[in-house]
Image (cartoon, rainbow, N blue to C red; front, side):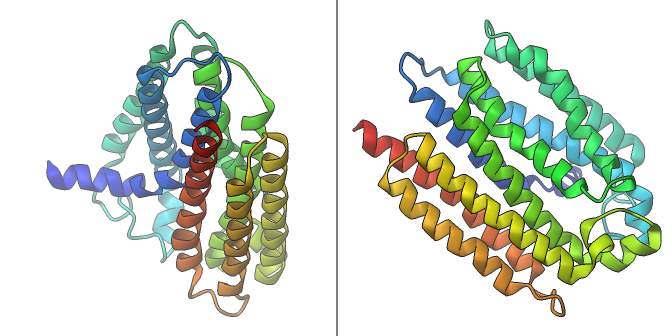
Length: 291
């Protein structure tokens, strides 16, 4: 049983939750900092559960949809379904249970209505990403659009409304995730072309894809400065934005068109620092301004 649980955690890459959860947490902190907003432990628990269930369902569904593609790709043939570590039936049941867990978790936010009303459309959009690579080279930005929902959803969970601040934070995620997913996809450019799968590296080549990723991360920096300016954040956040901007540029120094050996360093290490860095500087900025 312990090994089976470990296989499921590896299947959904549970550790990658760090890419989206800090943004949801920061949006919630900023929402609780609004005048007249009550902090409720149940809201914090609900946000955590929704994030874990939604991401688990989306990742498991992606592995189901892509199992034949994964089996044909030497880089991904060791994944759990093609390698026979988990059955299609087991992953299907897991996907259904986590999907139901996500929808059910929105009940925690009652009497707020928006989280419940939006739960099924959001879930369908998350699951729909798994088919994007079959028809559009913009699949990287479907993924980023899926993740950008996290701060908007967290704000809605706390405030039961749409607002500018979480939208700006969502814009940061959109360009940031889209950029680093393009970099990661460069590893499969040849395979995608052979299988007639759509991706920016397959369409524009690795050099062209890296230029598009650089542009995307430049827009990430722009969105970070807009967030600082329009959300009323202070000096601490501004200094952090400058540091994070440097990290994003360092990511592009690590990866070259003729040398993709350091893609995993750029993908995992640098982006994990960026994600948690934004959460830390945001929370510290809010705390200093309120103390």
